[in-house]
Length: 202
Ligand SMILES: Cc1cc2nc3c(=O)[nH]c(=O)nc-3n(C[C@H](O)[C@H](O)[C@H](O)COP(=O)(O)O)c2cc1C
Image 1 (cartoon, rainbow, N blue to C red):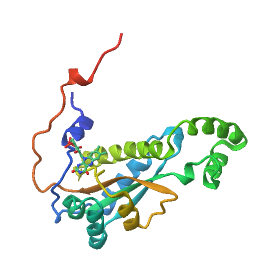
Image 2: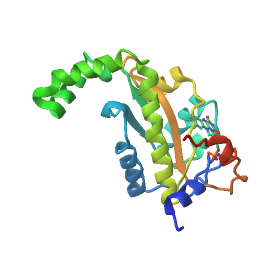
Image 3: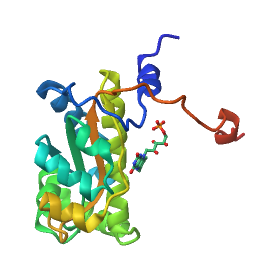
Image 4: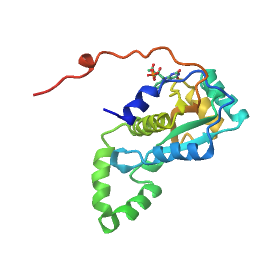
């Protein structure tokens, strides 16, 4: 089976050594961001906001906020995904605007349904989980066009928020993703066996 999606899955590795001389161009970057924007999200709330860093000074500061991980500074572009907290609250003005636009006269019915769900989850964790879906799509989408990435979750949340100037009353940081081109080939991949991670039910 010729499967280009699987090829991209196999190509994608957590890249810790980017070639600083090989950039991600504007068109490629916009494609990666669009893949993120089109991702699925619980209740269709699009809980993400994408911050894009290309300048050397900002990438250096982001590296410091990410436990000094060098790939964050080496990469051509770094996307910081923020997870919304305030704007997904059922009483927030932005949430109400979205409901009106999408559901018209049915908005109050939808609000009641949303609130009953929202009240049962940890909102910040729920929001971050959706951002991770967008992140996975962006990394696989990048791999599809031969661009490398590394999901970076080891960061100092307060330092990261301060570095990017984000309001902690509105967001929590979800993930940092440097994108670029690998400088060296990665070590062979390790994965648990198919049989260990898959159970067929009757
Ligand atoms: C949520 C998340 C956070 C991660 N954080 C880091 C990180 O801070 N630094 C890093 O080098 N790799 C990080 N990784 C990458 C994993 O270590 C890597 O995906 C895993 O070892 C499997 O390797 P592969 O991606 O090359 O298949 C993270 C992965 C995920 C999904």
